[in-house]
Image (cartoon, rainbow, N blue to C red; front, side, top):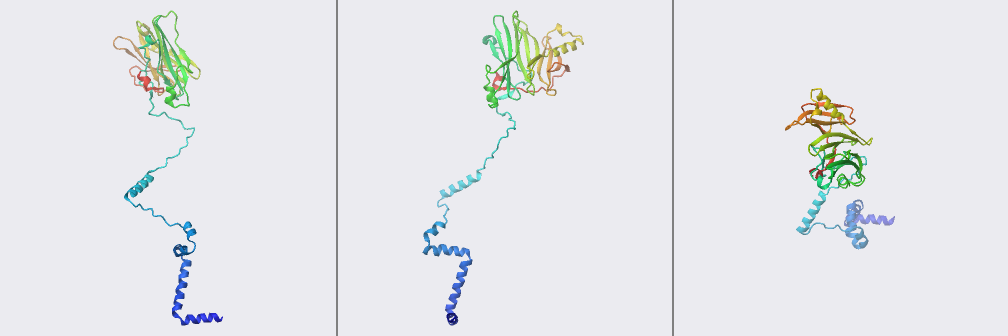
Length: 338
């Protein structure tokens, strides 16, 4: 108690010392309650006298990253610009339900284009004795159909067979078509009937087109006699669901019957049908044009259509050939040019 009184008395008599004590007390309060000042104090004062090494490790001095030369400056600018240009690529997990579409840059094209114009090239048949037609791929890209023509020089005759083969679905569209081999996995679905007594008769099979659902194949059998040329064209449809072929002779019968009612007996003249393809509006029907040979310019006998079962053939027009024909099958562009 006595010491406290002496201390207070000393403060009253010594004004200078009293001012110093007050300033020192304010300085301590500022250091305790001001965190920024406390941090600077510890770093700049205490660390130099007490815990220099440990404090420097825990609180390293900030590095000066400013470029020292112009080269370093431009290098840092380019790095910053490159980082801003980097765009992360999106990650897409493919769904198994998604349907692949054919790549537009593949070397493929529609087979029946223009409709009904594609035919097998027989220019080198006598020399090669065997010719394969263009391979026509189904709309689902899982099957291919083509025909082979065989020539027999001893009788000057030709026969033909139509083949169907499955494509490898594990490959992309173009590769599976290019790798399809005519001698592997093919099955004969139709062959022309040849009589051993036939001479100078050629029978060839040519694909017209696939149906839009890939369940049927329309093709034609052309029968010709060497000295006189083409005799007759038969329209045939192969049904993949039943595994049977149907010769659609009903359309020829309907054309003969119609013109016989109009005082023209076509049995007395050379005439023929020209199948052009599946009807785009009625996909179960096939459109054919009919012509009669009259010399320089054939006579148009009308546009007709028949269903793939041959139940009904009907006249579409006696003057027009402007009908929408679907183009379903696909082939390689290189084959179509040959």
